[in-house]
Image (cartoon, rainbow, N blue to C red):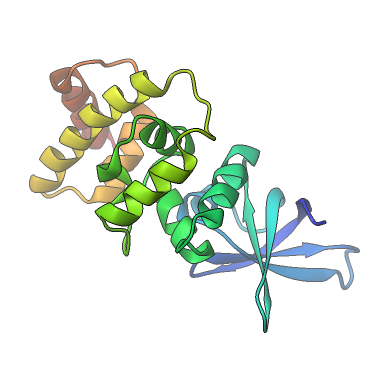
Length: 196
């Protein structure tokens, strides 16, 4: 079964990209659905390798792809939960990084999963119930503590007028060195000041 796809990124759209595979003169173009993080990391006309999942329904086939194998594995697990289809699974992957999502599931943190459009508390609890024992991540507790701080920083900065995407970008750039809320907030503000 199809597991990886390697080729040239020739175009992108809302929630998908097209990867051309084959010869330079007339290869085959695959439409691959993906999350926003993957779309943002790929420059046009670049060579890409994606880890893929082929979703087959009664009347059509859809291909989903990710830059990291870990993202594909989490996507497959989410997609196997009753009531979660591939589009919802993509929405969950856009809420935070894959390790943070895995940590939230291990630590039974429904509030992170509930940030996905269409996912309420009960659905988040079902995801946690079904996947909690299937995911292994030794640093889960440390990651959730850092997530708590980052959520507070994100809320503080969005209330000051910064966009959520801007704040998420600088928090990911900042790395994980700062431990306290105050340190993390100063770090984010410094990076936001540089990006103006």
